[in-house]
Image 1 (cartoon, rainbow, N blue to C red):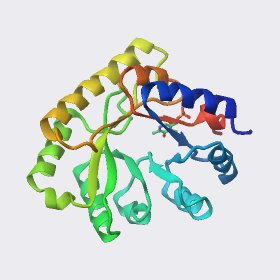
Image 2 (cartoon, protein in one colour; image 1 turned 45 degrees about the vertical axis):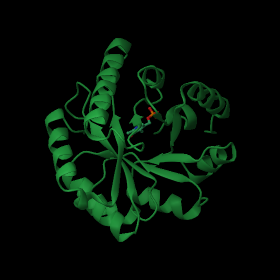
Image 3 (tube, protein in one colour; image 1 turned 180 degrees about the vertical axis):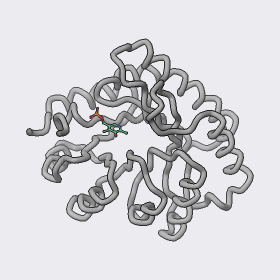
Image 4 (tube, rainbow, N blue to C red; image 1 turned 135 degrees about the vertical axis):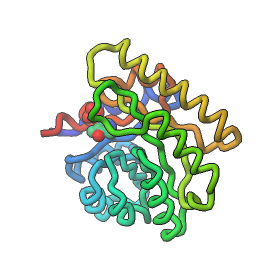
Length: 225
Ligand SMILES: *Cc1c(COP(=O)(O)O)cnc(C)c1O
């Protein structure tokens, strides 16, 4: 199926009104689909699988900003550390430390988002508030251990439901937590400003709740089989 360019134009103009940015989620889709959107002006692409990301990164333009949005295993960080533009799903102190280690090795700071568990489903990954607080305590107590990362905000996935009120409530709760953590831990750090919420089905709700990055796949590239 071809890339949906009218949807792309519509979504980017909707995002512009909010000052939000689009992560075009291209997992499972061929490099040719990415090129089609690249030619239309898109530069940020999101991938979920390390091996697939490496293959695509090797064959596509160097100015693409690759965002890793999947569940990242510590032992695979080293493969993407040299080039990844942002890692959305950081859900443990151990993973953040490993990203920092590999960032230092690659002589860069890797932008990261902490993934918070906001959905009702048990299955979705993410930190709860207790885990978040302990991660932030480690982060502030020993900044040297985290010199290779820059924490830029939060990522969350709402409950998979048609209940817009439920989704809206979850996104707003995450935004409130974001504002609190920003004030308590990152008051003077401009880089801490991203809230990655919203996918094809709920990005409008996410924008209303203060999302700055929306991760949209199927609406641009068609369904994944
Ligand atoms: C696949 C995926 C998306 C995109 O989902 P769509 O419903 O296809 O827009 C967004 N975020 C994450 C974390 C994903 O894994």
